[in-house]
Structures are given as structure tokens and as C-alpha cells.
Length: 195
Ligand SMILES: O=C(O)CCC(=O)C(=O)O
Ligand SMILES: [Fe+2]
Image (cartoon, rainbow, N blue to C red; front, side):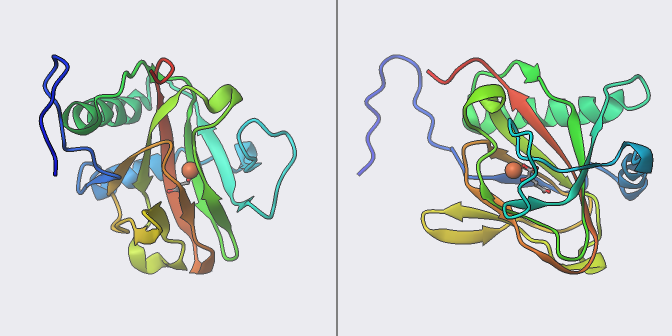
């Protein structure tokens, strides 16, 4: 039975595990984001805070997108959405992006096994994770972004342009790609320590 025993501030009950938004990036915009990809800057994905590659936990190619005047519209769009979503749902204390946006490519056989985006060290300020589907669902097989919620696995929507926001402390993974290629752009909104 839920009650409303407030300590002063109104109690808010609309926390959700993840939220998604369709159509906030139009097809020509997702294509423009993909054009930021520069094969010379491609790096093999590492696990945050770890220098060594760990192919058992993660296999993909990533590239970090510097915040320049040309791509500020992407940062801006994601920041505004994170603020709106946070005001409607989470009420976390947010400060901004402390890490560059990450473009990710998963080719056949690539994956990112169960993990949290939050943890000790440099990722301890992360509060909200925000990922955008940059590939059409039929461009790849497998490659589902999944959340573990109360022992149940829930799939995120796959439609190109969909932006998915979730607390960085939620367990999630990207299942192995069995055909084609999946691309995404991922950001982490940081804030002061949890309290
Ligand atoms: O590719 C995605 O949509 C999410 C990847 C991910 O979980 C991460 O980079 O932390
Ligand atoms: Fe993640």
C-alpha cells in the first residue's frame, strides 16, 4: 500500500527504468551524426577506467565526439532532452556532460555484455545515460539494447532516431550482432555525488 508521508517536498512517484523518445533526431540528422565518424580516429572500445581491452565483456569500435561548434547541436539536443526527462521523471542533481559523446559501431560478432555505466573512479559522477539508435532496425540482427529489470530482460526500442534515457546505475547490455552493423551515440550526464 503506498502512502504519501512527505518530509516536506512533494513525493513523486513516476520514476521509471527507462524512457524513450521517437523522432527527436530526423533521418537526415542521424545521417549527419554518422558522418562525424572518422576511420582514423576509431579506437577499440575499452571498459571505462580500464586501460586493457577486455574482449569478454565488450567488443565494438568507438570514437569520442569533441564538442565543436559544428556538432554543438547534437550536444544541445541531448542535453535539453536529458533536462526535460529528468524534470519529468528522475529529479537527479545534474551538472552536464563531463565526458565526450561516444559514437559506437557494433559489427558482426560485436557486443557489450551486462554492465552499469556508473561505478568507482572516473564514472562515479554519471547519473543518466542517453543513447540514440543510429541504424535502421532491419540493418542488423541481434544487437538489442536490453535492460535487466527485476530479473526480467526488457528490450529497448530499435527504431532509428529513437533516444533512450536511463539511470546509469541500471544493468544493461547490447546482445551480439549476428548480421549487419548497429551504430549508436551514447552520452552520460553527470552530477554531484548521490545523496
Ligand atoms: O550502444 C548502446 O546503445 C549502449 C552502449 C553502452 O551501454 C555503453 O556504451 O555504455
Ligand atoms: Fe552502457
